[in-house]
Amino acid sequence: MDLPSATGSSTLHGLAEAITTVPYQIGYHPTASLVAMCVRGTEPAPASTPSARGEVVLTARVDLVPPGDHALVMAALEPALNRQETDMVVLVAFEEGPGATLDGTALLVDVSELARSYDVTVLACARVRGRQWCPLDEKGRPASWLELPAAEDVRSVADHVLAGRAPAPDRRAVEALLRPKCQDLADSVARECADRLSRVRGSTDENRDTKTRAARTLAALMTGLSDDDGGVGELTAGDVVCTIEALDELGFRDAVLSSAIPWCRLSDDGVDTEEVRIVASAMPPPLQVDHAACVRMTQAAAYAPADRSAPWLSLIGYLAWQVGEGALANVVIGAARNADPTYSLARLVDLALCAAVAPPRPV
Image 1 (cartoon, rainbow, N blue to C red):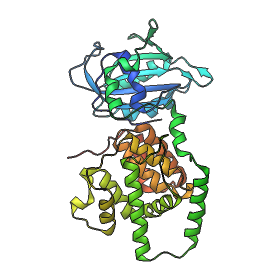
Image 2 (cartoon, helix red, strand yellow):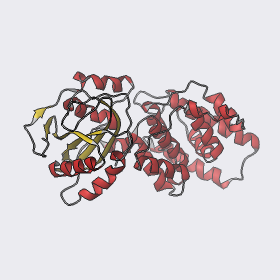
Image 3 (cartoon, rainbow, N blue to C red):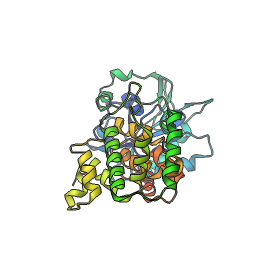
Image 4 (cartoon, rainbow, N blue to C red):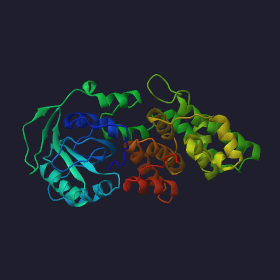
């Protein structure tokens, strides 16, 4: 399940346009998926009015399943539907998948009933196969198949394009960000991690230098260090290892989070630690983390040995959740929990994602 991907500024302009926007909402082109676009109403919307106005506040995706497995899907979608902000919902079954094509009609009907049980108005249900879509009527009966508009003809897509979002081909492409692009660099990082782990803990000055280098590495990743193919530029094994070691310390990790999220800056609360000063020097405000920054950090974190990756992946997962990159947040938090099931930040973000909790916002 990919949950959530918040896009509070997007406004629905008809079902066909909403379907075309889905890949930009969740970060990739869904296959064999049921997508629920949860909407906060800006005008009263009786159940019989499919043209009601509203803003998409959450987009949730679950795997499309054959008949008989509907209970698992509904349990996964329940947190998204049982939210205070969810007044209405659009349900879309993307039926084509690797090696099979499923008919999502029955599942759409069941999830519609679940939504209504929470007093959520079902604006529309639709099936999608390739570039065609088929709406269902109020009794769950499919209508005629229609052609979807091209993405460039949909106004709401422009907001995502301006924000630097381009959907990946599929979810596997998002997962591929966690695979190292350069095996030589991965091998060098593994050797240096093993070597440094075997040595006695460094001096205070060495630890300060490690944190300074890590802060500069993360700042470069967040603000645009990249090479021609969208990688992470001149990243070295030393950069990766210093970042791994620095993020092992909660004070440094939290200082990075505070710098990346301006309204949660620790220094504003009167906390003045060495970690805060080091990070503030490397990451002066304003610092705006976006989709591209999360992707670059994920590509860099891919070089961390699995048993040392949880802090870095949890940091990325939190930031991705914060900026509405639900698919990436789910992927990296899943990897963090596999690396260390006890790591508290990964557990907290995982709970928030599964419960469709919105990230904190400025007061």
